[in-house]
Structures are given as C-alpha cells and as structure tokens.
Amino acid sequence: MEEHVRGRSDPVVPHTVVTIRQGDRVTEAAKIMHVNGVGCLAVVDDTALMVGIVSERDILRWIGTGDPDSFSQRVGDIMTTNVVFCNAAVSLEQARYLMHRNGIRHLPIVENGRPVGMISARDLIAGAAPTAAEIA
Image 1: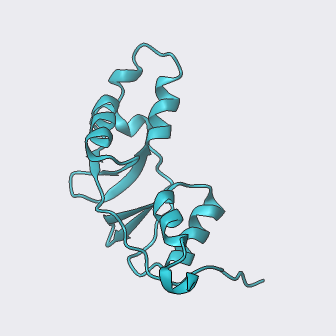
Image 2: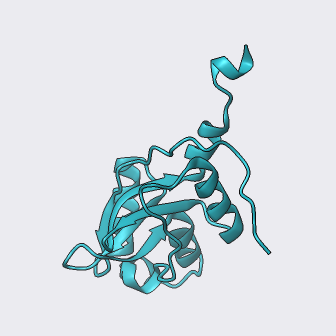
C-alpha cells in the first residue's frame, strides 16, 4: 500500500548542526546545548561521521536514574545510535511525516555520512503557520 504524505511541500530550512564527540561527558553535552540554544546534538566520530544523536530528553532520562556517576558518563553511553535522518532535499511535508511516524523531535540532515543540518519539531510548527498570502 502506498503512503501519501500531506502538507506543504516547501523546502525545510534547517538549523546549523551542533556536534559533540561520543567520548565527551554528558555534562559537556548539556553545556553545549545551553550555550547554543539547541535541544539535540549530532554525535560524531574523529572523522566527523555521524554515529548518533543525544537530546535533552536523553540527558534528563540518564540523570534522572539517580546514579551518582551519571554526570561523569560519556555521551556514547546515552546517545541514540539508531538515528532516523534525511538528506538536504527533504520537504517540509516529508520531514513532518518522518518525525511523526518515528516519534522523534529532531531530524538530522546527513550528506555522505556527515551531519549538515538539524530540523526540530519547532521548525515544523513554524513552517506550518500560514503565510500572509494564504490568509488573504
């Protein structure tokens, strides 16, 4: 059965992706997110290839365990490795569909194994707002 994706077909303008290495500490990830005002980081290896993502939710879940060593854990211990991603040609409707279908709030844009952008649920909400021409 063919699935149809509904919504606007406008291209998505992703945010610049912010990265971290899998060997960095969870506290460093939280600091980078705070400083950059983002809710998710692409986790890369030494050659800048994406190996996972780590989100605010991942960090809160990990710290919420109450483990006294949770702050000293490495990003690689808590990151998501089975990452849903897309390429730069993704449309707004395709991104919305992928995020909804997979229950995710961040969608990395990957080219040749390297993260080049990040789409957030907030981007999709802003993109769903009608333009002035559509209201008139």
